[in-house]
Image 1 (tube, rainbow, N blue to C red):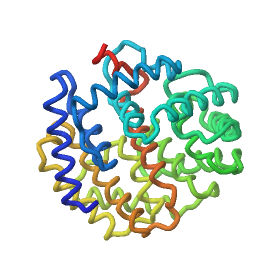
Image 2 (image 1 turned 135 degrees about the vertical axis):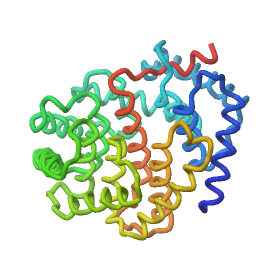
Image 3 (image 1 turned 45 degrees about the vertical axis):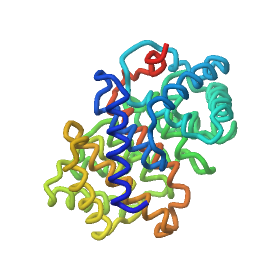
Length: 324
């Protein structure tokens, strides 16, 4: 998908959602959902979406899938993203069954049931993978006891698709975290997420990655972009690709175009995230990043984890209330 087609499709999907959803569904929900549909190369149809949601609810209840589907609380962007993931999947019912089984694997590995565990189940491969994730999560907690919690479970799953030295990986994460603090990055969950993602391809500490992270932030600042904490994971992804000036310029050009769209008026920070995801995905689809062969999954995980940090510890999943 070229840039112009992406922008046009994104606008159309957002406009369709604005016509369909009630006023209490804010741009903070509609923009990410429109982005998700657009990246999936799908057009949003309100009536079809409503029918799919009702069908999904019946299947979710039948399969006893993911407790958050029946939780009554405030609406969250992540609830819509998870629902859209299932709706856009080629085999929805099989995906529901897979996620439910993965939750059982995670519980058997020692993870307590939680919203974060449910999100992690989206990216789990099998039972052995769950055990590796638990080992890494335990090592992460040893190195960062007070900062590591349930919200790190998706990252533990994300980073253990292959067998690795969990102890060394935990140590390396902490080294990245401490090194980035020395570079004036702000402490907290977002910085921990960035330090975790930097171990995605190599559990050994790479000082060069710190240089890339610092250089990327400096480039953004020169472009008068305020680097918020929720963008830290995207900086990690750019650093992992060894993003050069050309790549960063492409990100900024698209970012500036997206900022002019009315749909980003109330959610300007999402323009930068969307532009970064588009550029990275474009590089992947054109085989310009050989080491990123499996990165589409990681981009999706990164996108979801970003909203986890935005939502703090009060995530809600009541999407089905709209259709009950």
